Image 1 (cartoon, rainbow, N blue to C red):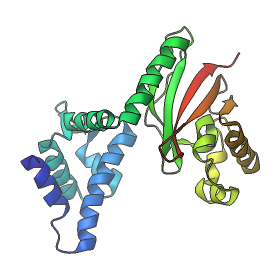
Image 2 (cartoon, one colour):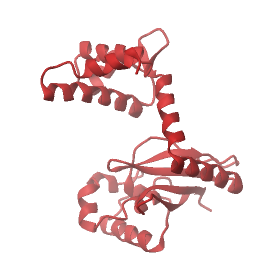
Image 3 (cartoon, rainbow, N blue to C red):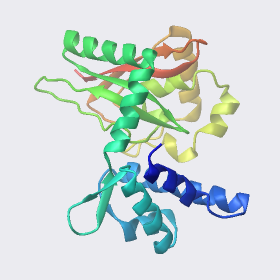
Length: 240
């Protein structure tokens, strides 16, 4: 472990009280999550506001992350963003996980064979995210924002990813506001629950003109070694 990484761990756990130690570590996580959600460089002072932490504490965390190369300075006006160490962490994950590598190979092959946009999708908490994507090279391009959290009911993949849940569990899991589409239309919860059950029976899911009135999506499950669905492959095409 590098000295800077060791210092970062110590900075997050310097307090003698267990609860305070956890809060220090939590702030590191909150800071990284805030950057991920913002998807662009941020000034340290603004980061402090985003995570609700004192500026002095935020500067201390940021300095440790800079030393560890988990963050890097962007420009000359105090902006910071993810550093090259974060790339190495992601590289290590994708190369260690043979199952993940095979999924990426399939993603590449399907995109090359079909010429359409193909996504690998999953959940983060109670939201859907695109984990990786190969965009269509055709004239009608549908691009995807990797990592952006989207309400589950808006997506074909979401109907598969929550297929292990009962209606009662779904009702508690999905926020009421997530049934409202970007154009103001409302998906009735009962209709969504029925879609989840149909996707479970069919082994695939398809949606049309939900989050985007001009796209059609079809998702297929990717099961882990225990048979659970924690990822999907999804085709995204223009509605004819």
